[in-house]
Each structure stands twice: as structure tokens, then as C-alpha cells.
Image 1 (cartoon, rainbow, N blue to C red):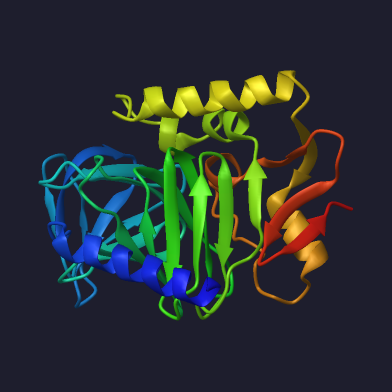
Image 2 (cartoon, helix red, strand yellow):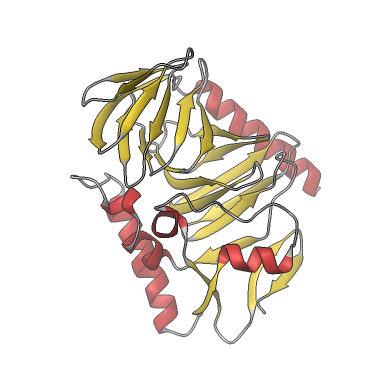
Length: 277
């Protein structure tokens, strides 16, 4: 029954992505410090406001740099420091070679497929963050609402606001689903706060933060003080899930784990529970 559910979930995700408009180009709506576009022959050009990025050209940001791109369907891609990414020439695929990005799709317009190294996953969810890991995988954090991450082999996981999952190198399995301190993450993130205007979904993100803070105040959640990356390195040594720190990574994509009040459980996947040290 569980296998059937995963296959059906992946089917509906794929159907949704097929029906959505292609995401093959976007316009630069903000450029901060060192942002270049790279052509297939290796030529680099400084990105400027209102320039259009089209596949197969790539974006490369420098230290303390970032950019925002807006697609014709109002999908927003915010690119963090020391990041290299591009759109595929068809469908809704983002190729993330290094670094981190924020991906926002207006409700009802569909998600996309994230590829990084040998890993690939279809993602649904209106506002999420994605970051490379050092051995070819990546992490996905949902900032508001409800979403899903699906692998090509049929595995799928549902995420709620404030939850994070790692996609393993090769894209063959997920880590445990982990809860993170959403307020700390958003408060320190340049992908949220480092631009001249707010995300259209910021009120929804703030509502999710308010809801999580209410759980903390009521004793239903507690901040462990442990970073998610450290937890995974301790519990799964040698699995390649130690995330890269590309300059702004610590403020863009890192936050401490949350646990249910009075317990030491930090995540659950496939019926397995993982305890904090």
C-alpha cells in the first residue's frame, strides 16, 4: 500500500508539472554586487536589471552577492551568494551546481524539478529553499504551506512549513524529515531579507513562524540548539550530507532543530525515529 501511495504521488506531481507553463527563462528583477551570466562557450557577462536569462546560459554569483529573477508566470527564483544555476531548455527544471536558492511559485502554477550533481527531485510547494550538499545531494526547506518532494524511483515525502529533508547523493533516498526553527532561519536569511522588496508570500511565511512560536511558547516544541547538518554528520557518518558553506550559507540555509516538547526526537522517516545526542 505504501509503494502504491508513493507511485500515485509521483504520478500526480508529474502530471501537475506537465500541465504547468515551462520555466525556461526569467528576467533579472534585482542584481546585488557580483552577478554574471555564463554562456555555453564560457564567456561571462555582468548581469543587469531587466536582462533575460535563457537556457542554456547560467547564473554565477560572487561572495556577498545575490540576484532575483522573475518568470513570465511570476515564478520567482532568488539566488544566494557563491551559487551557480541555470534553467533547462524545457519543462520546469532548475540545475543547481553549487550554492543555494529560494524558489517561489504562485499557488496553482506548479512546482519544478531540482537537479544537483547526481540528485534530482520534483518539488511542489509555493515557497521553499534549496541548497547543495558537498557530495552531490541537496536539502529542501519548506517555508510556508504544504509541499512534497518526489524522487524518480517513486519515493515521496510531504513537507509542512518549517520542515526540511535531505536528498541523498544520487537521488535515491531521503533523510529523516527534520523540523527547524523557522523564525531563526528567516530572520537571518539574505534570500528573504536581502532584497529591496518583500516576497509576495512573506505574510504566509510570517504566519507559519507565528504558529511555530506559539507551539514553542506552549511547550509543544523546543529548540535543541543543534544544527541540522551537525546532527546528520553525527548520526550518518560518511553519507555525504555535510552541506557546503559558501559564504552566506550559514545565514541563508542553516537553523537549529526543533523537537516535540519533553522528548528528544528530531525526525522520522519510514517509521524510524532518530534521537538527538
